[in-house]
Image (cartoon, rainbow, N blue to C red; front, side):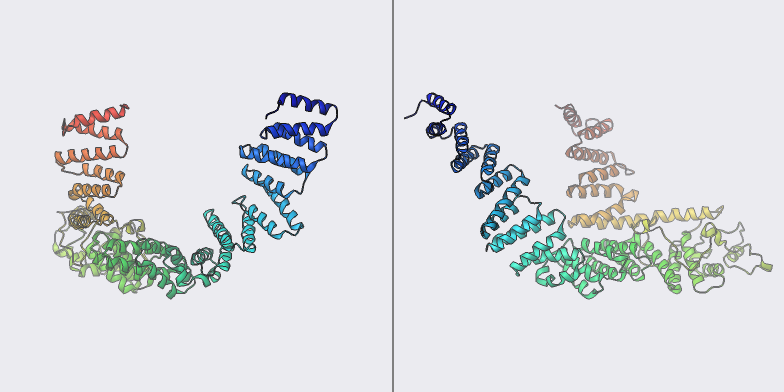
Length: 638
């Protein structure tokens, strides 16, 4: 039966005014028992217990209220009540732990640590070691960033006999540290995991990776077993690189071979290793490059093989074995655009190495193929000087006179006089002794051939590597060594520059078409075989020739579209539209396709502009007006 609460409250207040505390407590107790969730009245009852010196009753009342408030979600009020209890009983373990738990839930981590630490100290004081360890585990769970507390919690779990919990804590801490970019700090928890579970391959692998990355190879060595390394490409790469850096070439190459088997990304990884090793250990870098080239050649990826060699040469210049291999790859792979560039670099490398005879042989071949290139004359002169020729200019002139490609009857690269007498012109190619120190007026002027007079030495002739290494040369040439076809000079050229210009013009027109045909055929075959990425480079080369530009650019756009690289597809459609001698139909279809791709890439305004341009030339080609109306509505937000 419920009581008259108003009358009971009034009676309790009267009793308090009269100083009859015990009777007032009894009256408030009746009110609380009648409505236990009346927290205000219950709190007043607890305060009366405190006034009466009944601390235990007060604590029980406050704790009951606090738990009720927790259940209802009023955590700050509950926390305040536990603090109230701790003022009455500072060493109450239950109050300390509950206060710590509530502070943690409220994000008051400093308060939580303080409450837990006090409780742990109290338990240790009373000899409750396990109880103190339990609280240490709670402290470790407060803050992920508190690494010492988490380590202490894991150790506490070990002491409590909770090995699975300790392993979980150590492993989670190591993973968190690695994710935060603090991998070196993960060494301690990983070692602890291996102390508890020596057979943990995952922990051994992670620990080895961290130690190897930090250069602590001696510490990592016990963990770098084949079982632990497994097929982990990162660990194999790091271990191989360190082995190579430390001079253990056999072990390093064995790991690289493992990496190259069955891993499509391995060539990229090994190429990065080459770059990192090239400066300090060029020979190790060369051995890695040989493996990359061999793997590419096995797949008939000649472009990839040449690229690997060019990257190595960019770091280690004048490396004769690498340049020789590059020349072989270019010839075997029909990389016509790159053959002469490789030969020029090889000649320079021979000069740098003091191999004058080899440099001269290569320079002679270059001159017969590109007699208009003044750099080849400089290479030839440097090789002759390195051979010990007292007068390299005269020796070069003699060689020119004796070489059929340079005789006036076959292919004269220049005209040195206006004389019409063939005998005089022939004599001009054979320097004669100049009387009394005077220069023969009919001798070849090498300063004109080589450009502005400058001193030449037996050192290498520097090429522009930014051009050479990209495989871009102005004049593609046939791969197989053969003499150039006779090139007849234009009638009565006025000077050397005119003749050189005529020769360059003729050479630039014939081989480029031949090379572009080969490149287009190769690229189209690769597309047909599904080798889309590999087809890009030959098709780009083919597109340089005006006659092949439309077909190559259109096919490149299709390749990029299949690779979902629509921006590049649009770019190559633009090149296709600019191709010479394009039919109206081809141009219209190309512009329509460009508009489609622009719309797909979220560029309706650009698509509309293309359609309007097309409409100006083609009228209502293939319902163009309908498409324009739709794009216009899209622009207007309709």
